[in-house]
Amino acid sequence: MLYQQPFEGIKAGGHLIIATFAPEAPPKCNGLPVQRYTFEQLESVLGGEFELRRSRKEQHIAPGGAEQMFMYCHFRRSALQTLAWARPLSTLPDGRACTVQRRL
Image (cartoon, helix red, strand yellow):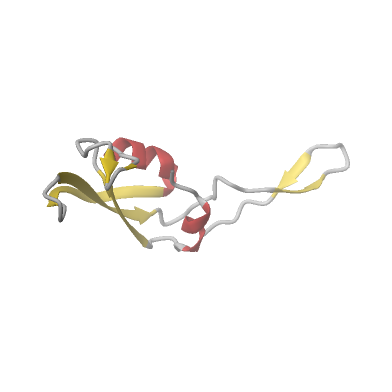
């Protein structure tokens, strides 16, 4: 599962490379279950904050001879961004929550 917090350090216009198991990969690697992603799933997880620039798949042969399909994605962070995880800062006099949204 991907988490948003590690991406906070990527500045506007910054780059993100993700390598993961492709949907065609086997469900296990060395006996352990793996999480497989499609390009669309990665884009969905990253929201509108990152744009997919390039991607490719590569067949990898594990030391034991098993074939595993990997996927590599190059994303670029949008030039002007409002973070989706803005947190409530305080409460206005009328009781509404006041949030701060950082622009990168």
